[in-house]
Length: 125
Image (cartoon, rainbow, N blue to C red; front, side):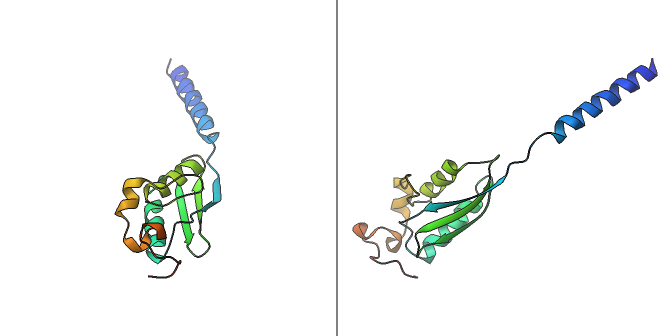
């Protein structure tokens, strides 16, 4: 009887390990997102800091002069739409996702669009 239980435990353990070994890890995806409303170094830092707290995002690099953000994220933990929404929640447009209105209102004047009183050209503040 003891041997039968031992065999059962070992079999269940082996099946469990096999199942865990077959779980695929998500791949690291690199995406470029147009962020045309990013105006300056403050905006850059705000987005990078915001994205660093997002689930699945490994890194982000904002180039405000080019108006684009490069994000590396794990595909099993998030997706491109979630990343764009995160940028929009920080107050900035991201590709086809418009900035969250409440977050945009909280941005410093210099970080807003020129039509809202922000700086007309992208420069370092």
